[in-house]
Length: 118
Image (cartoon, rainbow, N blue to C red; front, side, top):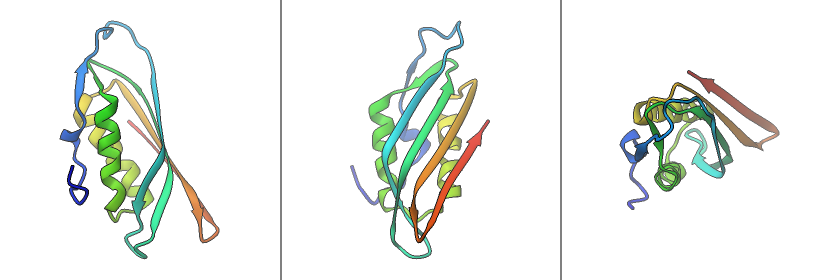
């Protein structure tokens, strides 16, 4: 995997949801998420929480991990990365509903939590 490559929604592989006839919730956390502050160039660390009700497809977890790792060298604000992940996830598997929470570690005395849902 090319570490300088930007993550894109096509990196998120999906598999058919064998239980698409019922609503159920999938919760995934990514506790070692990191990206780069576009202002300072310093690394930002946090946990990304994904909660979704699948439709016809579910996201394969190894591809999710590899997608998340690609943010390691991307300069992006907390607010933008949270919304970008939800947009990419929606394009990849079109869930019935989805919520993403970006819970970022404090830096410079400021803690950020960004929540987005569709």
